[in-house]
Length: 274
Image 1 (cartoon, helix red, strand yellow):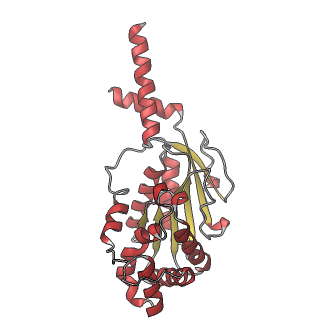
Image 2 (cartoon, one colour):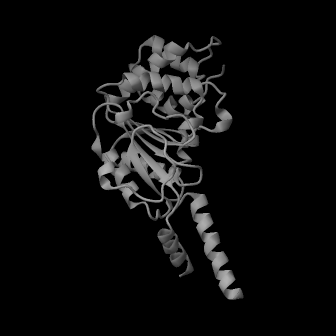
Image 3 (cartoon, one colour):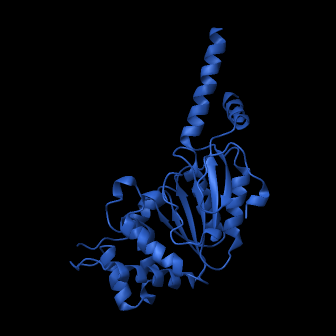
């Protein structure tokens, strides 16, 4: 009996660790904005359709969410295929893929896979990982997301637009507050300029923690992108905002990330027990 209880406790511990770490998850997905609770079943394949600040700190902060050790992803073949298909599609116009689920269910793991898939397709990927503690810092997320892009293609912007972004991202010595409309127009101009050089991806882990000025600028811009090849790849908690950031609902693929099915938990236990 003691051996049986010890074995049972071992299985429970492994199962909890796997789900909590987000390495092994399963879920369902669909298009649209309606909220759904995480599901244990996969849906069918038919439903898969100041002082200047440099950009270095933002780049390192965002890349840290991607450059972690790659882990085996169990029980997510269909979702990974959907992410890869979305990355390979390369359709013109603004579009998005949202990974929606509770904390600890593996959204970030899938998001990392999506970032890798887009990069393998040759897309330019801009990264941001906003935190709840930074929601009151104006344009904090926009700095993480676009500072490096501004370095690369900012020369193609008009002087007023470049100045507006430099002020918003604290890259100039101007003491005047950034004008919200000017910043939004500048972001739109920057995304259009970058997309002329190839596919562009805005990869945001935890969309719900975007500070409001950053979210407003992105909503303004994405709503106005028509033929530009710009994609949103985001993670979102189900109790957060819609996460569309100005995109049309029918242009966004929603992937609902749920807990790991019992069968896949068994596979993990078997693999780890040798």
